[in-house]
Length: 335
Image 1 (cartoon, rainbow, N blue to C red):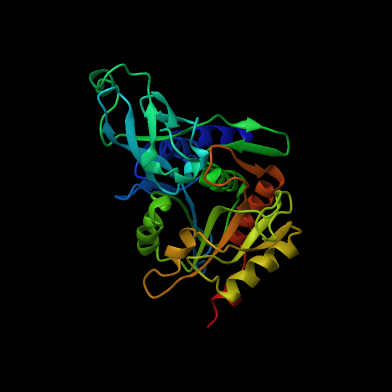
Image 2: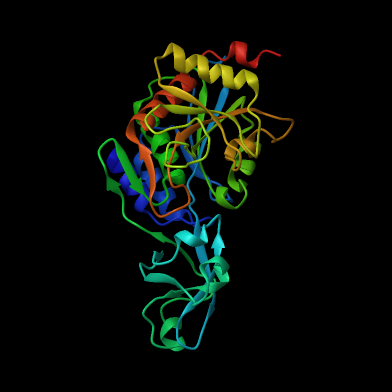
């Protein structure tokens, strides 16, 4: 599974330009599902048909996009100005590299001035150009780039850019590979443009109209020096979301996930996220409301070039996805 994680995290795929990641995932799963398609929004939707006519529709969603930048200006000396695509922390960018889809690499640095005044408009990208004309021969206004950093295996733990949310994608890929028959029809959505407003999940949930929607996404941890007072830690299992900025998990869904985890001996913890959201925030507001929840992957250093997860948590999340996919939903769906 680490090879899957390496491949997906190192791929290019900022919001709106998820094509390379989508193609990689499709190649990994196409022989294990019954249908696979891409919609107008760029969501990759894979369907595994259920074995029972009484089966329900379950939607799993992990977003394929990652944070990035887009070029807004090229000055006379060939330096690029840019704005963010998704949530970038300015203080983490200085000295980091970006990669354009062409493979072109640039270095982010800052103008002189006090660090307290640091803002995105004080940063620039150096692509090694010697003039505006030289730069324009390599990159154009409006071109997107991602933060450039390789995957690193640290044993039980791994670090890479775009664990948010390629790790969720990898979990769904692995679950698809391991799943046998399910009574339910399963929709695996590798969604687009989550980082800029949960956009792909909104349209795909409307089309699918599932009986249950489950997002897979990273969450913050409280297990680092002077970290937030948050009871989520690496190595303690799948995090079952209680609430975040985009949703309050329905009590029935929270209990359902916790019961499956307990009965299956799956390590788990509970997540209360003060800021942030997942695809479930869009799914549960679709049509006249959909039961939805989130299986979160604990992740340190979210929205930086070196996001870190624990393989034991990843395994627990795969097992919980499989448990949901084959569970009896009768009690959950009763009014």
